Length: 163
Image (cartoon, rainbow, N blue to C red; front, side):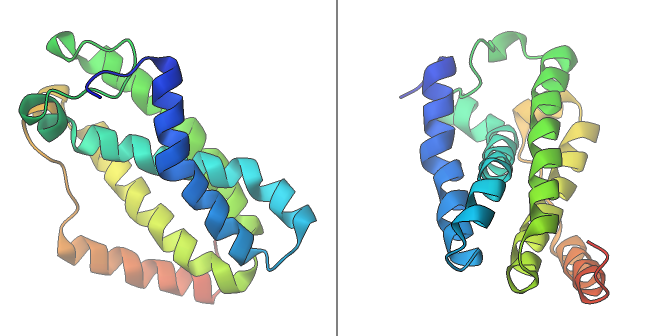
Protein backbone atom coordinates (compact mmCIF):
# COMPACT_ATOMS: atom_id res chain seq x y z
CA UNK A 1 0.00 0.00 0.00
CA UNK A 2 1.32 3.47 -0.87
CA UNK A 3 -1.06 5.86 0.85
CA UNK A 4 -2.77 5.58 4.23
CA UNK A 5 -5.98 7.13 5.49
CA UNK A 6 -6.53 7.57 9.24
CA UNK A 7 -8.01 4.09 9.68
CA UNK A 8 -5.25 2.39 7.68
CA UNK A 9 -2.58 4.39 9.51
CA UNK A 10 -3.91 3.33 12.91
CA UNK A 11 -4.25 -0.30 11.78
CA UNK A 12 -0.69 -0.32 10.44
CA UNK A 13 0.70 1.08 13.70
CA UNK A 14 -1.36 -1.38 15.74
CA UNK A 15 -0.14 -4.34 13.70
CA UNK A 16 3.48 -3.26 13.36
CA UNK A 17 4.26 -1.72 16.74
CA UNK A 18 1.52 -1.63 19.36
CA UNK A 19 1.02 -5.40 19.42
CA UNK A 20 4.78 -5.84 19.88
CA UNK A 21 4.51 -3.67 22.98
CA UNK A 22 1.62 -5.77 24.23
CA UNK A 23 3.44 -9.06 23.63
CA UNK A 24 6.48 -7.79 25.51
CA UNK A 25 4.31 -6.42 28.30
CA UNK A 26 2.66 -9.82 28.75
CA UNK A 27 6.10 -11.31 29.45
CA UNK A 28 7.31 -8.38 31.56
CA UNK A 29 4.40 -8.47 34.02
CA UNK A 30 4.93 -12.20 34.62
CA UNK A 31 1.27 -13.18 34.52
CA UNK A 32 -0.16 -10.26 36.49
CA UNK A 33 -3.37 -9.43 34.62
CA UNK A 34 -3.95 -6.37 36.81
CA UNK A 35 -0.54 -4.91 35.97
CA UNK A 36 -1.02 -5.83 32.30
CA UNK A 37 -4.31 -3.94 32.13
CA UNK A 38 -2.79 -0.93 33.91
CA UNK A 39 0.17 -0.75 31.52
CA UNK A 40 -1.60 -1.81 28.32
CA UNK A 41 -2.34 1.68 26.98
CA UNK A 42 1.13 3.13 27.78
CA UNK A 43 2.78 0.08 26.14
CA UNK A 44 0.72 0.61 23.01
CA UNK A 45 1.51 4.33 22.97
CA UNK A 46 5.23 3.69 23.34
CA UNK A 47 5.12 1.29 20.39
CA UNK A 48 3.15 3.88 18.45
CA UNK A 49 5.73 6.58 19.20
CA UNK A 50 8.54 4.31 18.01
CA UNK A 51 6.72 3.52 14.76
CA UNK A 52 5.88 7.16 14.04
CA UNK A 53 9.53 8.08 14.60
CA UNK A 54 10.47 5.39 12.09
CA UNK A 55 8.04 6.95 9.62
CA UNK A 56 9.64 10.38 10.06
CA UNK A 57 13.18 9.02 10.03
CA UNK A 58 12.53 7.10 6.81
CA UNK A 59 10.38 9.75 5.13
CA UNK A 60 12.93 10.33 2.39
CA UNK A 61 13.32 6.68 1.40
CA UNK A 62 9.66 5.82 1.79
CA UNK A 63 8.38 8.77 -0.20
CA UNK A 64 11.08 9.59 -2.71
CA UNK A 65 12.17 6.05 -3.50
CA UNK A 66 9.09 3.94 -2.80
CA UNK A 67 6.27 6.44 -3.30
CA UNK A 68 4.88 5.56 0.11
CA UNK A 69 3.37 7.94 2.67
CA UNK A 70 2.08 6.90 6.07
CA UNK A 71 0.80 10.10 7.65
CA UNK A 72 -2.88 10.50 6.70
CA UNK A 73 -3.92 13.79 5.16
CA UNK A 74 -0.31 14.89 4.69
CA UNK A 75 0.77 15.84 1.18
CA UNK A 76 4.52 15.45 1.20
CA UNK A 77 4.78 17.71 -1.84
CA UNK A 78 3.80 20.53 0.52
CA UNK A 79 5.39 19.12 3.69
CA UNK A 80 6.49 22.05 5.86
CA UNK A 81 7.45 22.93 9.43
CA UNK A 82 3.80 23.36 10.46
CA UNK A 83 2.89 19.84 9.36
CA UNK A 84 6.07 18.42 10.88
CA UNK A 85 5.29 20.16 14.19
CA UNK A 86 1.76 18.70 14.22
CA UNK A 87 3.14 15.19 13.69
CA UNK A 88 5.73 15.78 16.43
CA UNK A 89 3.04 16.93 18.87
CA UNK A 90 1.18 13.66 18.33
CA UNK A 91 4.37 11.66 18.87
CA UNK A 92 5.16 13.63 22.03
CA UNK A 93 1.83 12.59 23.58
CA UNK A 94 2.66 8.93 22.93
CA UNK A 95 6.18 9.31 24.33
CA UNK A 96 4.94 10.93 27.55
CA UNK A 97 2.41 8.16 28.17
CA UNK A 98 4.95 5.49 27.28
CA UNK A 99 7.50 6.90 29.73
CA UNK A 100 4.95 6.85 32.55
CA UNK A 101 4.36 3.18 31.76
CA UNK A 102 8.09 2.41 31.78
CA UNK A 103 8.37 3.78 35.32
CA UNK A 104 5.73 1.26 36.43
CA UNK A 105 7.35 -1.81 34.86
CA UNK A 106 8.95 -4.40 37.12
CA UNK A 107 12.58 -3.41 37.68
CA UNK A 108 13.86 -6.52 35.91
CA UNK A 109 12.09 -5.53 32.68
CA UNK A 110 12.55 -1.79 32.91
CA UNK A 111 16.09 -1.29 31.59
CA UNK A 112 15.59 -2.86 28.16
CA UNK A 113 12.46 -0.84 27.52
CA UNK A 114 14.03 2.29 28.96
CA UNK A 115 17.09 2.12 26.71
CA UNK A 116 14.84 1.71 23.65
CA UNK A 117 12.86 4.73 24.85
CA UNK A 118 16.04 6.78 25.40
CA UNK A 119 17.34 5.94 21.93
CA UNK A 120 14.07 6.73 20.17
CA UNK A 121 13.51 9.86 22.24
CA UNK A 122 17.00 11.05 21.34
CA UNK A 123 16.23 10.43 17.67
CA UNK A 124 12.94 12.28 18.13
CA UNK A 125 14.71 15.31 19.61
CA UNK A 126 17.17 15.31 16.72
CA UNK A 127 14.32 15.10 14.19
CA UNK A 128 12.54 17.97 15.95
CA UNK A 129 15.65 20.13 15.51
CA UNK A 130 16.03 19.14 11.85
CA UNK A 131 14.39 21.27 9.17
CA UNK A 132 11.60 19.60 7.20
CA UNK A 133 13.59 19.90 3.94
CA UNK A 134 16.38 17.80 5.47
CA UNK A 135 13.85 15.23 6.69
CA UNK A 136 12.60 14.93 3.10
CA UNK A 137 16.08 14.60 1.64
CA UNK A 138 18.01 12.30 3.97
CA UNK A 139 17.71 9.86 6.84
CA UNK A 140 18.30 11.34 10.28
CA UNK A 141 20.26 9.06 12.55
CA UNK A 142 22.06 8.89 15.87
CA UNK A 143 25.82 8.28 15.64
CA UNK A 144 27.24 5.11 17.15
CA UNK A 145 29.29 7.21 19.58
CA UNK A 146 26.10 8.92 20.78
CA UNK A 147 24.33 5.55 21.08
CA UNK A 148 27.10 4.30 23.39
CA UNK A 149 26.74 7.43 25.49
CA UNK A 150 22.98 6.95 25.69
CA UNK A 151 23.46 3.35 26.78
CA UNK A 152 25.94 4.25 29.51
CA UNK A 153 23.90 7.13 30.91
CA UNK A 154 20.75 4.98 30.81
CA UNK A 155 22.53 2.17 32.61
CA UNK A 156 23.64 4.54 35.37
CA UNK A 157 20.14 6.02 35.71
CA UNK A 158 18.63 2.53 35.88
CA UNK A 159 21.21 1.31 38.39
CA UNK A 160 20.59 4.17 40.81
CA UNK A 161 16.83 4.02 40.14
CA UNK A 162 16.55 7.47 38.52
CA UNK A 163 14.22 6.45 35.73
